[in-house]
Image (cartoon, rainbow, N blue to C red):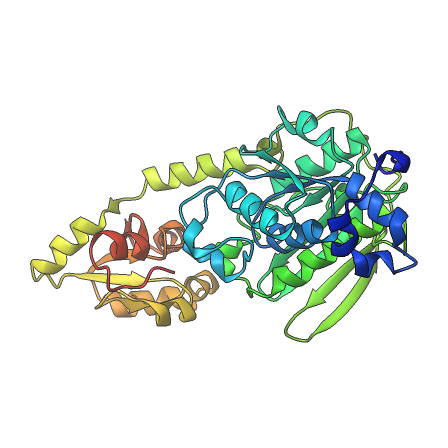
Length: 390
């Protein structure tokens, strides 16, 4: 609750010293620090956004932090997920986050939910908290968090990041708009690449996550002007901030219950189509490719369809490079025809998805091919460890 009984909240001697720079701010003062101590904030995700916002909320003196995540720390996380360390690789993110939070502020109560947020558990998990901070990276969970916050009348502090750009706002606060006013319908599956596919500047989530933490603290204190009704857009390359006005849509359908968000975002259909495409497309394992290469056969061409910067990071010897973007535009189809010169075609990317897409396009142009299962990632892990994993 955002209006607690402050007479029941007391600061310890350690807390007076710890929060001294807050206490001398008239906009915070002793009353504000008590509000922070009484507050309960739920963070969905402990990735790029969740990392900085949890660190700063803990340091600010939030009394109770809830964390929802089911993932483990991966080495590729460490470039941007600053709450985790090398010693935690392979271990649960929520445990890593709790350990770091208690290093910063031992008095912070941390509740862990090592589960995927779903329509079945979202209302139960979110209900005890005053504010929800959305640190997720996928559309089904964003719609789920939004709808649950609307049903429970909880502020939803939103942020998202991609490559060099980020955005932040506050949804469902003081009669302001919610996520469905910004995005009434999700984009088609695969239309928006993930950070794993498109990349993200490691510093970027620090900026957006700290903005989310700032908005959370302001809501608790009841001070300043929040981002409710304003979408803040940040471009790290240009170092620019822009604002767009957001208003509630009077014709927006009323949210009355939680739904199947995977279905709403078209993911089951997309997965089914992907599986159908894979079933109709020949596949080869990396072990089979290695055996073919060792046999000395020269009647095949290994096509690499990744992005140019990925090709610079790692490559399989003897591969021919034509990026998927060129194949999609059509010019790459002619390149492949010319280089193939009647040989058998084997295509690969990082994991196998983009090469399957490339082979589908090439098939329409009359070029049959085989997809390398697991891509260069599987090649590095199973055949040649000298090829970097990225």
